Image 1: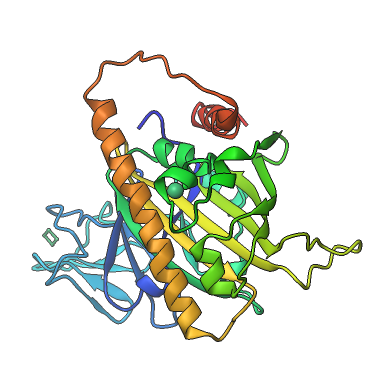
Image 2: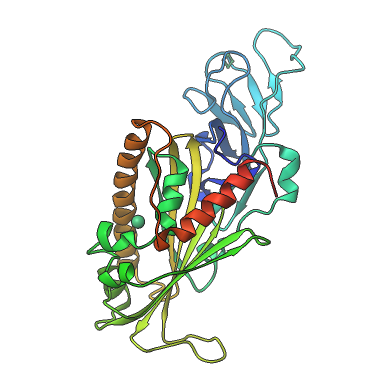
Length: 345
Ligand code: FES
Ligand SMILES: [Fe+2]
């Protein structure tokens, strides 16, 4: 897994996906079992029984209290991964324990640390506070992507593709027409890309959810924390409406579009997405519309990136890409990820 940053917190699931049933997801090539203890804590351990490798997520494996019982021959493990019972003998082999992973539940996500567990405490868990914050309503989902994570990073860092790939949803001509500014904050480990449209058509995604009927001032401020957490701070307002001098912004609509990019393998990715808004908080129709629209948009990206993955794997290495101004954010992100993957700070 050379191109993958391993000493890293990744989103493994939404908190709602993990309960009192064994749940499995592969992160960076490792099959990980998640379940909640009786007091609601999330555990993360290898999803392979040490005996004959039967997956502990596979029926008839099951939970009994705060233990998981292998469905093949009954090896039983505690929440710390240590085997507490084996069939046919009282002596439990000393090595009978599952690898466990540091795990944190935060901002509606379950984060898991891959790589050296000793590094987990020193590396911060990236934040997306809007996703479970008062004053915001969130819709979210996850789509499997049969493409390497770097293709999704490229895709999200360059939103000019909205005009072409997502026309009729979030794309309008102004997105591709408006130049971007890119800033790299090496100290914070963040890449910023901004595109500010003073007078743009309002795409259906925002027209239907906000009720704005005319043209808009549309700001797209991307904040990407390589390798895995992306936020698009989106601000939409009737054309000409700007924030107040003190920074308050009562007449605009704010949407935080969050993506957690989690490599499943070298060539497949979990594409977690969430759309948080600060308006129409209790309006179920708006929630349903944004959930359906964003899922459609994500699936348009997934379809395109799955094609690209097949193209790339079918071609010899060494193809010389051609990059232009719109690619500066993506190129900066690649550089930062390469540094992280090489183990540099
Ligand atoms: S494979 Fe799990 S008990 Fe045998
Ligand atoms: Fe897209």
